[in-house]
Image (cartoon, helix red, strand yellow):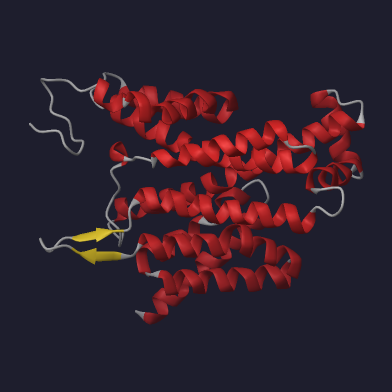
Length: 311
């Protein structure tokens, strides 16, 4: 039994490394770590992460191993640990770490990482300018940007670099939480999950989250230079959490709709092919604290599953 588990850990580490090294599949690199952790425990997740880091350092390079650890492996192990935390209620049931807190934890870790990266790696000119210079020094990337976006000046290149940074940092918490959800969904189907299946219809975010969002948006509008880009990146990360809330609302209000499956498949397809679809979904999550969309869709002939609703 121990040998079988060790073999799974090794294969998971190899899979995580291959996904990271493949570049195009890099966003899914944390999934094997999350799968092992959510099915066996946090110690096993740490073992997978350690093996993946060692393989990356030996086969690729130590700096890439550090990047892999900071961006994906360590945050995923932390999220797995928190996801498996539980306490026993008086009824005898186990209450696990709330999904809302997992989202806030992912936001907190990625926000701290974003701030540190801007402060440490930017140099005197700031991270956006350094990134733009890196793009300028790569002929293949420069040619591709000219062909796709028609870039002709350094200012336009800096603008594209800033957009890429903001988009990349905004997707960071989504990738961490998304891989956690992918692993959990697979384990639930296989009946190997340690944490119960989540009910996303009941997801809420604290109303106070709007305060740092407004502050970051204000900083993006008022601050000069790279601090404005940092503020925009942090605001985009918070909006990413509201995007998740928007998806949860859509799942909840479409529960009784005919053709719900086709609707959801179409929505996710549009999200992948047209990034602007993320904006209205995020706005729905942001406005939910005011309008409570899930309450508006309650049907008297079909009782709601939401907390506080009675049959």
